[in-house]
Image (cartoon, rainbow, N blue to C red; front, side):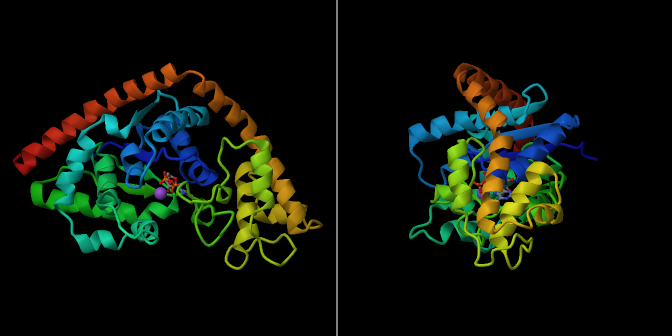
Length: 329
Ligand code: ADP
Ligand code: NA
């Protein structure tokens, strides 16, 4: 009954890393180029669930927009917008928050992970998944391309859509996650392969960012944590460190992990790290160049975000109007 529509978002804090790129953004571009109806959000309201420096945040928002454009997001084919420019996100968040319970939110793994090290947990961090639900439902999106880490968050979105529909009549489609083959969709931290690669990791050596210099890339690959076995073998369960490097190598080249192991059979992991670094350096160089070109045109970026946000607003206003009528506001 609902037309197919794709929605996804990325937080602007810090730079886009390989996990974001292969877990989500690459797919965003494919869906856009396949002619789907696609909406992509720079989720700045999500970023402030943890403390941010205002100047840094502002420049991170522009940089994320520039990076998405450099990755192939085309503002004529996609709606690319900044979340805080569309106030209906927070209005729908409130409405949905009134339909769920505190225990339900407390069990979401991304919340547990992010709050584990905090002495005092901001309310916004707790409510974060409800805002995510509002992001998606506001556009009545049906397909949500995300990394594997987002599965539980999406279950909450589905739950809230159902509760709302049951209580107030059919208003929202039940969105589906579109997830890359899980064996390769979740890149690990280079410093601690038991954790995912993340922008919010304190240690910048834990991730390769798509705008890293060749020197940064080499340093990070050399320092990547591996085990005491020197052979290059692919065994994500028992050898997560070297397997993560092989996964990155595989994602960039399209070679299967088995082929990569065969090609590098005479190298030890120390030497193999240099091979991976070289692959990453070569593949990221043109992307990094394009980001720099976009960054040198801040007025253009501003204009993209403004126009995108205007387009998003048209849809958001219509949904919010329907929601208000149904709820009786
Ligand atoms: P981060 O956790 O790095 O701050 P975001 O919350 O902005 O990333 O997520 C943006 C997208 O990137 C989401 O779809 C998320 O699932 C995906 N993503 C984040 N980290 C990884 C990872 N390590 N592997 C695969 N996908 C990831
Ligand atoms: Na995240």
